[in-house]
Picture (spheres, rainbow, N blue to C red):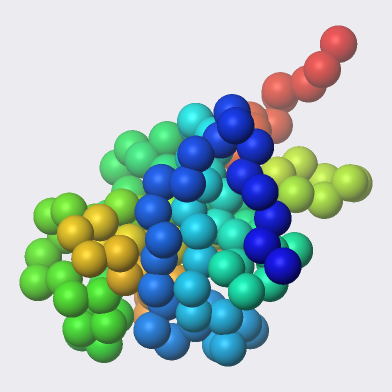
Amino acid sequence: MARNVPSHCRVTQLLEFPHGLPAFETQKRFKLIDREPLLFLESETTPELSFLLLPVALIDPGYQLALSVEDREAIGASSNSGLLCLAVITTAEDSPPTANLLAPVVVNLACGRAVQAVRSDSVYSHKHPLLADEASCS
């Protein structure tokens, strides 16, 4: 029941989430689909389960990644080198899009393992605005 990825998109990598994603713990394998600058995280077994992502560095160039020991072990990372940090983007009809900087998706590019790393502090928000307040369409 896999969906074909359109030709203008490319599957960057197949990812394994050892613990699944929060609220989707049974979903452990995802395709990371690149359509620059956007990325999509699509479940390999449930293609209708898909998340819109942006590199955290595009949203907040000074972002400081904080990984727990458990998250580092889950993805086999001894340092932040070689890690891709992505924010899940939420869109709603009646409100501007936001980025979840509190719990980024962190990918170890070397082995294709990933986690949604929920921070234990409250330095960042799960509803970080993507657009400036004065931005409007005319």
